[in-house]
Image (tube, rainbow, N blue to C red):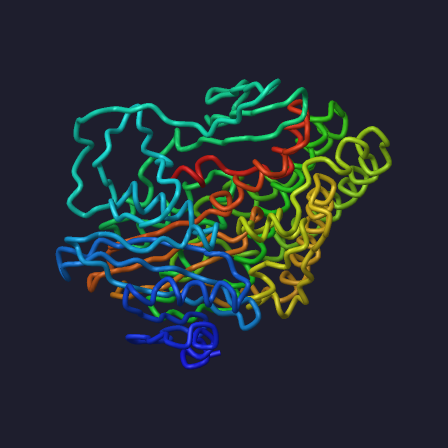
Length: 525
């Protein structure tokens, strides 16, 4: 589907829609510019036509050069493998736009982010509480992603207003932000009536680091290291999504060897995280032996990563133009031998858990996220597939995955068991895919090409183990980054956890939480 086709789809639902301009700079991206009065109608039409949540909604500060702000909203046309961005300009003297949140819930958090980081008001958004710049420590009126921001200025501090549930027998249980164990901070406020949870409000942002600001003014090769540090257990997926955007801007066509190698490392990252989470679920039901067994399998994959690349967590492997390592015959043999042993152990682990009545009793029907709720919230990635939503970027933008005959894992029930089964299927699927890609590897062929920065704007993406990781990158004529917008799947999915725990009891929260295993740093940025 091209620009004319997209505009035609919008006009079917909004006949008076008028595009100011449209372009298809890349085969997988269409950009349509509208006037502010048509922006909401265009977004509602694409949301309905593609059954897509708002995948990304972000602002750009272009006041210095063009006297305006800009707001872009991205949707996924999964059928045609296409990203569609609706753009509009906003005058710098009246930084407001009509909110989408009442009609498209998945826009809500993005709008709150735009308000707190740019001071652009989404008119009509019913909840403009700040996400990361907590009112107790950062006065209103500080907008860090504006280009003229220098430092936090003083002012009046306020308290955060939680949503309250009141009634006879209802009480609150606050948990965090500091937790036992080695996990980042987050505040969870449960409202319970007796034992069942009737509301969970999650407050994050405690480890906001200004990541998107850190990208500004850097060259793309330099910024790869930042992307690889956004979320420690998704180094490869984040670096791959950023590099994908940068390479599109540079117009690079990569050697097939680089694409196969990237796919192998992306699947290795998926494998060690999935088995880690399966072990975490066993821990949270008190089943210590399979939890320890899962740790052994994870450690075997981490040691394999180190022998293949020099990094247990695959840091420094991805570069603009290719990858920094090759897989010669001895490494190929090592990889195949390790996969065989790991898969034998993993089958034992799966058998151990699936044949345990006590484990199955705990995961079956716990933490249900119904498909309708997941669709309304805009849930993506693994939790979406466990609720019957067929979204996986490896399917919609297959690339080398087409040669390996990728099969998407899908479940319907949306409970902890479904998320467990998705992990089992994807772990086994990743091992098969790696073998397919290994057969196509030729270490004598080059896996890296030279690159040169230039001006442009592109969307990069990768299906990480949690779900789609998105980077929108805009560069200037020198190839330096003007704006980098990041969306980790956790940003979409934390809301899903708050709904999945309803009607469960608080002691089951750790199990439900581990079945999602969302990223704090990926959300807080």
